[in-house]
Length: 399
Image 1: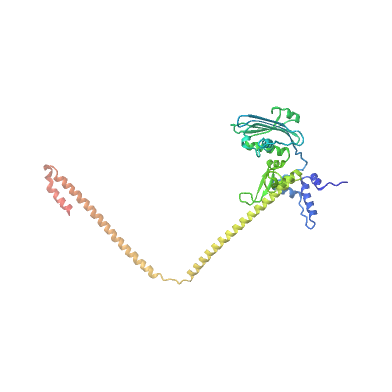
Image 2: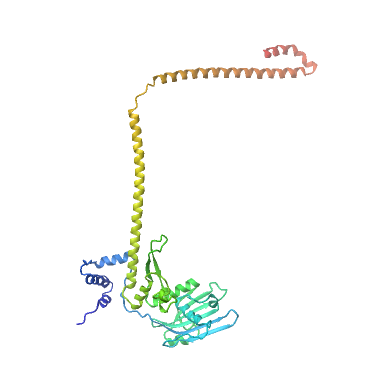
């Protein structure tokens, strides 16, 4: 009986086959190495911690077939233009004997709805477009991507993704009313997001995470997520020539991942996510180790400083303990004498203050008596009868 290959066994086994298949390859690839076994629960727990979900790698229909391109717009000089180009099955090419004839623009009109954003379409030519409709078959499903661009409207660009039951029904629909709406978006970023999400879902593809060794704010590495634009770049020859093996995004390891995607290697995305998770954890471990070493160095420096202060205090204690005891009796006697002298001076000060208060009161009384006498002498003659009586009082006040 014919035995299935390793790949077929993994396809039949599902997620469990991924772990056992990897262990099987390790045992046979390195006979001198001791095999490392992992239980299914351990594998599932590790994948769950890394937020990785495994699915059975059933073959997916990832074919794209372009049917028709229609573009309507107005050039900068006010001249309207229309493109209605069907694409029959087979090989086709865009050729013209002269430059600036619109070959690149026509190609970019195809790229725009397929990629979600133009790649090399000049902004001036892009502003000419009012409506752009691309009919195609995505994974066996007749689909229309309709872009509309209205100058002065915010947001200026919008997209509707529609579908039909058959290719004939799709091509027969002159407008979008008979078709079923699948998704829509408005605004440049939203249009790119909606188109990218649609193609990833329709083609059963996932975003690829790759580790950039110099990425991140600290420059120590970070994951880079590549979505539909990176995948679509592998559908045509890029302008980089031999600088990029596949695609039009320059990222370490991305061309190889794109090649694995087209070859349809099972669990390629899961393997990339695991690689990113392992490198991310290694980065976290290195950073934690550096922080621990830094804390240890700081604590060692603080301990050395505290030890130096402790040694200094112990030295002062020893010096004070060994010093001879001084005789403080003469100092105490001198302090008593100073206290007695201070008390005597305070008493003298109090007596002087009392004498000053008494003198001030006497002076105030004399000034009042003098005022009374002046008022009396300035009185009429009849009021001076008591002059003889006031003289003794003035004399007494003068005393």
